[in-house]
Length: 423
Image 1 (cartoon, rainbow, N blue to C red):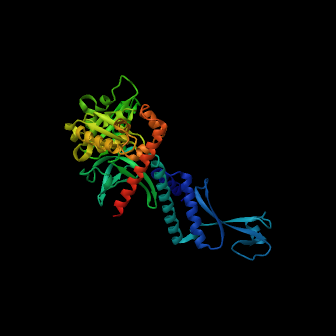
Image 2 (image 1 turned 135 degrees about the horizontal axis):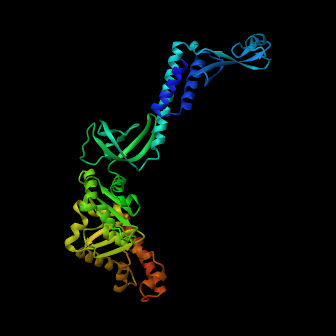
């Protein structure tokens, strides 16, 4: 029996990856729990005996002259029959055969042990995967539940929700699949590993896998933007002047990027050079369109992008896709317009600034070039800043009055909008 128990412990430890000491603790707990249900009121302890290879069950009784509670006390005379050296006040351990638990008790031990082993296995899986977020993983599709893919990833199953799948891609049970671990959750049924194939991190990890220069740290991925299954933009840079980051990502005859495109079901990928200067980065991101002018509003983190009239549709892209990806990639709000539209827009803004008393054509143009688009933008200047912007055309005293006038117009405009909204 002892060797059978040790074999069970060894088998569980090997198959489930649980420490033997934990399994022994589970067995001790299960036997003690069952014993307490059968022998209510007794003070008992279950302890694994290494030399015997079995769990021993003991009930403890206090040695007394006169017994008041037979479940927890024993007379000194009875105690000395078990231990000749027993003294009054001692705690005497009396061994109980685990066979006394009976068939129902044994079944209860088995059920509790199974539960504890399952809990330990779930905890181990959670601990194994909780630090693997943002990693790529390969598995096999086991089944499909309401559009979600249940994926066998080795030690457990993961879920690829329908919303995390690339549109129109189809997988069937038995198919191999590669995905990105987006989250690891601890829930009552055990750990839940959430996968994604649409996350920008998935594309980034595919490049890291395909391009050795990225894995080595020579080429760096600075930003990623995706419309899954359709188009993506990835910004890259190099820490070595002799290594072309775009060439490294594209690979010989485009082999590297084509492998990724194939994995992403034909998703087109624009690889662009990253630039630490925001305006230049935005110009790269809006490619393939040519950018003529850029006006930056730092406070609103917005840029007005001017492109040739015949390249407006190219800059915006089909259904606005190109500019949307550029916005995702750079983190800037972008307003793309043609030269003709920009000319009209500029004229409209400049004309509105001329309504501010004290401002002339030159200063209105300067304000527009500086990124001002509303009266409130002008009102945010200090007198010193506005005077310096005008290159001395207006004094600080005059600038102070202009700012006050701009503020009044901004408030009037705000009230007018509120009134329109209420209507």
